[in-house]
Length: 315
Image (cartoon, rainbow, N blue to C red; front, side, top):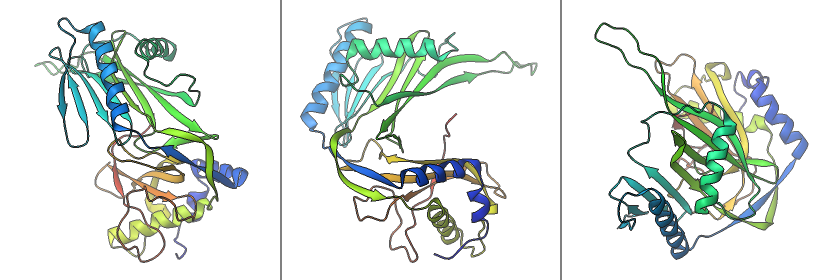
């Protein structure tokens, strides 16, 4: 890949500079194997989740209706409760459909949220015993306000508090769609809980040397040039929103055999007509391992990854 204008400016960005220091310090990262989930085990656990939660909250017979879909199995209750299981990724989700993005909570501090989530997890045995690589990451809120017929704005109502937990392995965070455990609270109850859980085997299968961050930035600009049809793409055209190095976890519909290090960049274009942004993924090593990042076919120059719409940024 040739040198794009503005890469040096991007390297001076505090987010990128922080990544570069991590790479310089680590030099190499272990790659770990993921235990492939057994469908029967995942469905059995999901059913236990459903029976436990429905028995606690349902106003009638807690038994669930089971609906099999193409890539998931759904346990449904007439009161509006749902438990979904995705056997390919060992992802299980609970949702109270009547209280998500509705209701009201007075919770404002992370300590209160964490106590509620910890109690919910312990009662229904949602996280494997002895698991220590899950860390509280951030607290977010679902808010709304309205306007009267006289065009007067109402006060802001906080409907839900959202606790986000990140996974860590060997000193690096997991990143990507399947990397975080998320709990939503209404009042003082968990009304939505999403738990992707790929089990990591303890012994590494390989050790890979990390590519310099500059290589990933070159790949990002190269990909943007190809997709926009503009040869004169510069780092100065980009407003960087987020930059991460970590173990990539694919979404809940995808089976994955390994966790390996990748760079993820979220950015917006400074001259774009829309505020929508993009996410670019780039392997942080050159080994020929499992292909897990979304990609475009037959790249002509270097390794270029598919740009995806960036719809949600971390707080």
